[in-house]
Image (cartoon, rainbow, N blue to C red):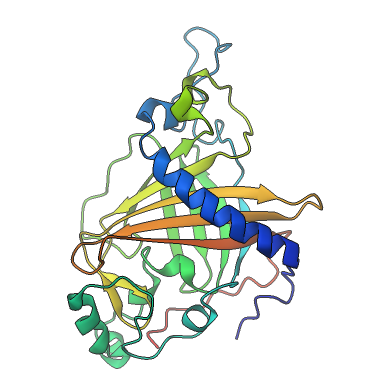
Length: 283
């Protein structure tokens, strides 16, 4: 059993600050969807001082925040639904449709195991809520890679004009990413901004082509047409502690009433301490 407070201590002040920022950040991200694409696109904008004819910075070179490194999940809310698999049929506080409720009541982990679907609770739609550690690196100048020890999953965030690969949908789907800069909707940031760190920026990710899975591990489903939008941002404390906030917006008319929003938090680690790859478990 992984312990999430030991070795990742968080001050009460930090927890309170995170709670306040989560609400504020979630609201601002919804408004950010109205921003012009050119002002948000990672790797396409270039500073006013850039040399004529020079290639624009890559998504990696243009990164306004640093998401790389090792991170540990902070389970500061919904402990009973995140640290352990909830009981069958428990959909408390979730905006599920009748179809989702019926599916959750019929959840059978043994059946998932027999069908080779033990990873249904580890797909992109649900994995970020699990107790886990992340290892984030650049796979290339336009692809950010996130390895997750719980379930041994890997997410790839594709900047630029990458197209979904051929073939069947996968657990982690296809994720298209772009940088969002603070104030871009008001004419600041984007093309007029020089590359480099910009606090308050975020990485916006839209994930589609997900293999049907569970957004809560006890069989609460999302379907193959679900669309998930996420915003990744970082904050730092005066003592140097760094945190990553991930706000998720999951849309699936088949199984979700309206739009489901949730923010989860991670704390940055100095090294790989605690990294413990474990296979998917349907139970």
